[in-house]
Image (cartoon, rainbow, N blue to C red):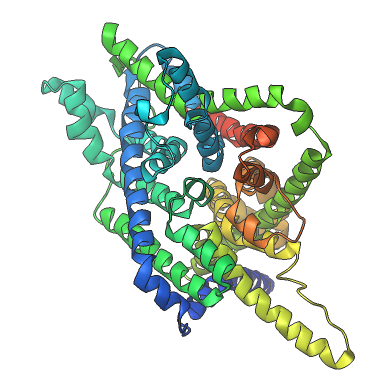
Length: 544
């Protein structure tokens, strides 16, 4: 009886968390069904189809370029011996620490007409005008595709490399015995077996590409994400912005359904946890150096060159960039990230622990509901969060009106809105990490604790929490970094005169003054390296 009573309390908490975190999405869907007389109809008749086409082209282009980059890199580092392989295996993950808007700003500054590259070319060849020579324009849809793919390819790289390592290497050995070359084995064995992992990686990349705001906005590429931003701030129409958000949700839903459909009949009958280094392909001569050169080329473009440029700006403009504002914005970003990390970890522990002790299909529902926010792009999430918070603010003001008290925008106009939006968006990261850590804890420990008369709360505190420390740390770091990098939601929901490092960088870059925000951009990148270090250590530990 005591256990059932305790289970009921955990059930109430878990379902309350799930309902609260899915509420913004429900409000967004309801708002998108409202009648909007003119604004959305005008957008539909004029530019909305162009925005949709650009969004789909961006998703397709980023996915295709990510495949070209990530699949060969994953296969080389998983199956082949070549100079620098062990170093490249973890170094190729470093671009994940680089926000897309920072790499877009850096390369625009480098390759624009007034940038050092074109100035050097004009100096060397004596060119005077832009009409004297041809140079590609980076501020285009193609340029946005390249910039975003350079940052997002590690998602597919990590997922496909993990799938390759989980495949039975006997199949690759069998292909060798049948006379297939390494390249033929890659196309006929590794790619078909890793199809599900590839689709999963591409789905994640497509969602991130569609959610990108700052890079495409800076490149003047109109997508649905920028349309939501412009409709809200330009036309002041939440309903029209919600309708555009509904189109984005439909695209996301189709992408997720394609990913699920591609894995419907996929079953792995044999696994191999690690690969014997003696059975790897040993590349020699020209092939070995081509593999090393390809890895170097990608790493230089995606991480080394942007970091070196930011370092150069940081040194040259140190006095202007190193001021009290930098510390204020860093501290404000840090506070928000810590609060969101702590809350998401606490909520995920409650929900996942309820799933564990209930042992029924239905307890999975609260976690699934609470995790839906991760699929929402930042601009869409801002709309979704404002809708219920504005309703609550209006209700509070109406309730206090007879007492001559006006609370104002207590929720929607304060830091609470931004923190709540971050929790809705990044809860899924904490949930997935904590859930994976819980799965590694034997159920026999729960039964032993229950047989000793311990309540579920005592079991969680005395047994699970000590065993979850690594998973909790990883989840906290991942959520912390995502909060530090998040830009669209911060731009739309931050209180007046409240800046984060991300919005600080955006404001300076909008004024073509990247060098004055170089230290802030560097700090965001350096902080992003922390979880990559722990992920790499965890992968090395699991492969032993």
